Length: 152
Image (cartoon, rainbow, N blue to C red; front, side, top):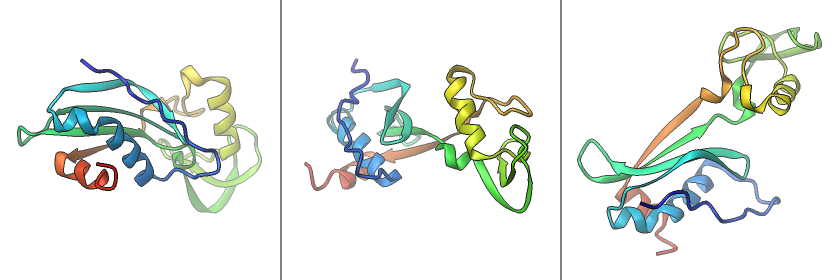
């Protein structure tokens, strides 16, 4: 059973969007999916600033499909509010609030927490694991064919 096939490198000058990420994953899994081969990458892989894992699996309609789990980028772990409050970590004024408990935490502090505690990246207030914020995308064979139509 194939495992992770994430080997392509991205030029640092090209910003990677979610559509670019989908194209990348569809390109990796295209032949497995078209041959109805079950495969997966169980660990999160970084590609152009996005962390994701994927698997080819049978969907609800009993056809093979592609399932991609994408971690929220660091910038999406906070929301912008209108009021400025003191960051609970550094006490500087910020209008960012962390998404789990809505406490004021600036993006700089979140980056520092992630950098210094990569294995335990959690909210400084409620201690919720911030690595668990993922979004799941399900693509059918036809969706993957459309994504890869220029390549195959």
